[in-house]
Image (cartoon, rainbow, N blue to C red; front, side, top):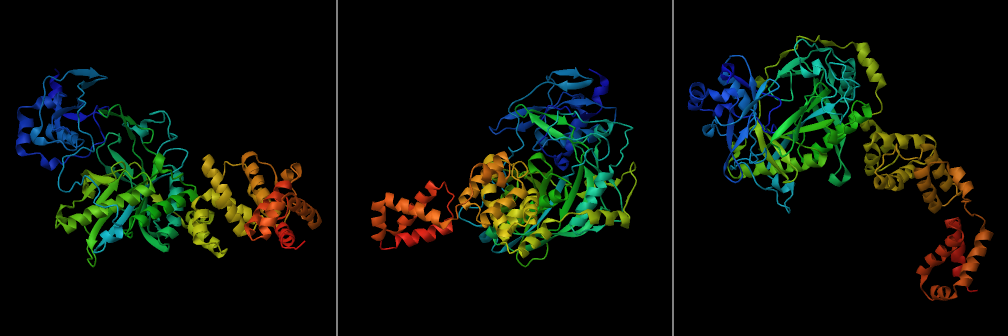
Length: 629
């Protein structure tokens, strides 16, 4: 074997190992372990290594590790860097195997052994801080659990910007594209490749900063955030550290009526620009992962809130409002399922009256706003339980994963500190200077934001429940605004949109932009019903056809002869005929079964194909039914 392989090692990005695992606590490596690695077992550094771990069955299983060659250097330090990818490795049980087959693959020495019993990211040794089931009983509300405690919650939100190209190169980004089909030397972090800032990123960052009522920094800069992970080819992330582009803002949130309602104002600590990392694709049975660098370099905004939230509902509504905001601004589609909006929750618990914060725990893998609420409720109950058991010191600053299936959080890794990232100014990018004219130009271009729209709709006399429904989707709000701009009655327009139109969209899985109905025709339909040209029943039939096929209200009324019958003489003739055809029911009505009025009205509507004016019909029908003739 090559003697050069005996010097040092790094983990290759094509490693056949489950890279979902977390950082390993290097501090747990003993002096004996270090001495053994240095002295007698350097063959580990040649690629013939396997880490021994404990499987769910209690048996030891070796995990394959692919190593590639480096020049001679401090082997132990690099070896420890490789170990940071293995969560749960027991250093005292670390064994080396000389029998592992090693092959050269594209210039890299790779061990080909694959052990199916490798422990997964969620199978961890149990300890007293790792709960196997939710401490929150089904009959127990979170309010009861927090009777003597207060939760302190903040959220870090990553928003993927909808620019045509990436942050520092000309590569486009399309979600779901063929892996590694949109990359270049800059995305891949190849030597000599220099970044060039996309000006649209600055524009979008300023928009978000203004919308969040932030103070904009006249001069900000980029920094390098350094950490080791296979989806980060450069070995550092271009971000902003001490001088973010925006800071000290707030976000207004109106809570839904079903959660108590009310208005909240949550502080925004900072908004800063950065680039996204690549994506690890965990394939097969989880024994290996592949790296897709399409997402590497995609522009992000990280929005950090103040720890102003106290419940899972408040945190979920904060996230939903932030999603609405970026969609209204047009800077991001905000789709959580695509990773365009990702929320990491920081939570601690303290006794009521205590001013100092408790130990902060970060929760990741939150794929929906309901997951945010449920994960926070679980974590609150877990921490409160430890407080009540006198084990508050067992709450450590760590990152935990939310397991949707098990409805619980599990330990992922020990939380890094700022010093671990070794921030320093990005030498390849100039500072970002914002002039007053530039800021004012963007401010003047801002659309009406969700908070302003809600206040305007409230002034129309709509209930908060209706207001929240209409403003939740920017396209629905625009449709409503266009409808009432044509003179349609505000409450009737709201009722049609929230009722029949919303039901149709929900059933057909369509957005309001995908149906054939236009705001002009909805306004015409409302006017036709209100003016008595057609009945409400006919209006529903016309509405359905307009949503499915399109067309005009007037055209459909004329084509199908749907004009409402408003001639009292004509309606009276039809009523007389219906009563004469149903003498038994007429006798029963006059004998006290007054509910039969609906039967007679239905018969008249059936004969007129729903065209009889309802008000006029009921008036004439009652007169006839109650007459003694």
